[in-house]
Length: 182
Image (tube, rainbow, N blue to C red; front, side):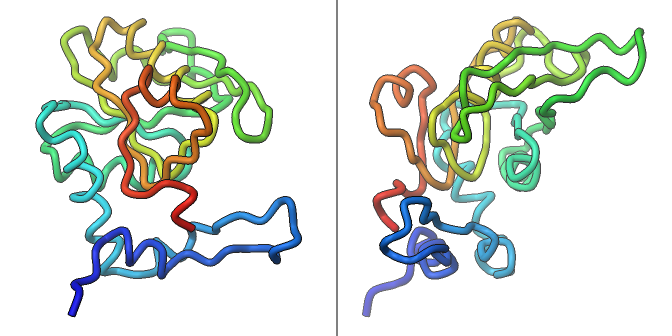
């Protein structure tokens, strides 16, 4: 009897919305959060993709990266920084690093950023998210890491939906599944 893997449990918890004739059919990841067993496994599984690279800070874009990022950070013994979308500093003394992303999966250009004090030169940063489709947000996060003088480790995602190989190599993307697995 075959033992179920994390990838198997992710596929089982995923509902595909739309019918086979729908051009906009897509897997809905909200079932991943409902299963306590799967939720408990996601942090270690994603952390394992880059454990040998020893990141000391995990970045997670709003909203699902902010859910997954702390799970991975705890597993790695690292800190966590939320990458905010289209937000600005709370006051003039709160210096922010900000970058505008290339087009994302909805063809939007998002302004990504976080407080400058949260990422320092010498930090080793890993970006964590649920899905990567175009790489736009990840490229903006990679630029933010460079702006801070920190080292980019890569991107750990549950699902790799990139259609081209170049962004995967440039960003160092590692995943638990590929979109074709659905």
